[in-house]
Length: 300
Length: 300
Image 1 (tube, one colour):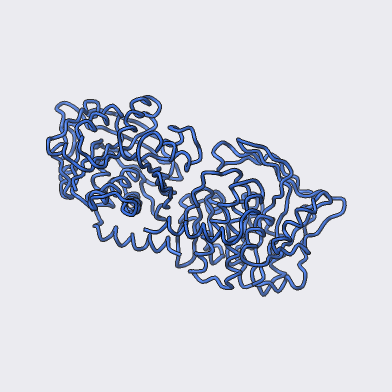
Image 2 (cartoon, rainbow over the protein chains, first blue to last red; image 1 turned 60 degrees about the vertical axis):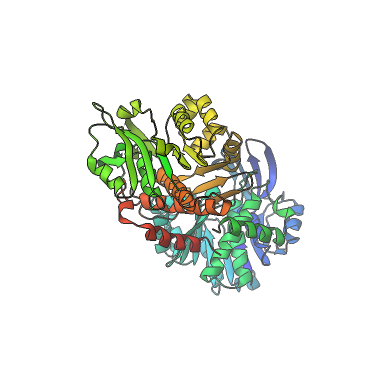
């Protein structure tokens, strides 16, 4: 089924203890789209500047990602993010953010996109996420991501969003910040009580937790000795998850758990190299092969 | 099969954000023994002072734990530990340690104990652990725990111990400290290369990882909304794990993974109340019932 994602594409500079890389293809919607594309066609809504390398667009298109609603703004530069990972690779500092073209991001979805059934609102100001939601009244599954900035600075808009979406994906520190509750099991259900029927708390190298009215569970991350760059892991997780749900065309509990597993595995590949480099080397079969190992790991 | 544990019993004072409790039955060997006792008879080697409440001994005996080698030292007080949990319940500060009777702990195992097949060396100075190991030349599975203090202060003795034991159980920060490696998958295998055929890294609320030559896996903690007191979770984990192995009388890969699961579940009950209070309310059936749920949680 049709999957639309609205969010950022970016040029990232990433510093790890081993290596520094500049001008990488990044952004939440890029990682999301690419990971989702193993499962379903994706329609990507974003904005770039004049400095955006066309090869990045071609790379996305090569994976059946529709980029026709990626707007290029004349005279603007592409959104840039730069960050540095500390030695444990699980903590990072944002060194610089230049919103550039993203400051003018006011997505108007093409008519065909508005009839999508699966919609993902990647991390953006909640006011903007709400505007997109208004354009897709027929979506059967709407999920969103958020971040500490909006929890702190646009709490009311975020709470309005939560009352209207089906699912929220956020990381552990954000769940604690949003609820004031440090026990993640309680925090997950408290977020759920703010509106979304399902909540996913991402715990980085420790996996992800799922919460619905009747279910609470946790799946560990796939153990990886070669973590090269964790950037985009959470967005790849969401992409793998939503991509699988859109492919299956439903979101019953068993499908949701499989989706959580595929999200986990998409993220596990993403961190094995910078940018989308590792994902570019794999196909759906590689995800499926790792799924077999993952399932075996969790069987006893 | 016979399981012997050598380690501390203690009187703990624990401060959590909700409540402070004094003079609780604690100590690594207490938690270990109690958790292991659901699976197999346990022989506990430890030392106490004159202030040790006999009711604690009776509680252990009621679970088929042989306390005849728990020595009471005249004129001495029992080992005391007091600690405080921060609001997230995953970090703690040790407020005070009084070794007391533990300073004179020089375990001489009864003849029958020396013929044990399964031996657990709870957290103690590695020199002492080595002395115990010398007394049990016929043990088929020897595992040990350790802590940051010995990694820093008695590294050589610890390395000597590692060359002689079959398995080491330690927490994530200790594995990083011991190896200098922050990726836990690599750290686990680096510890293994120091000697033990198998290594378990405990990650607190995030579960536990297992490493052998041919296997690397992680099992998540059982999600618990009611974490009252995390003290003893790691020792209960080790007790549930070794208890199950001793019950089964082998340690092939499938048995080891089941043991990891039972350890996880023993720990999940322990944290639901102070001291051994929650474990006192459960029987083997409760562990088995939670195992069914845990297995279902990890199935997709």
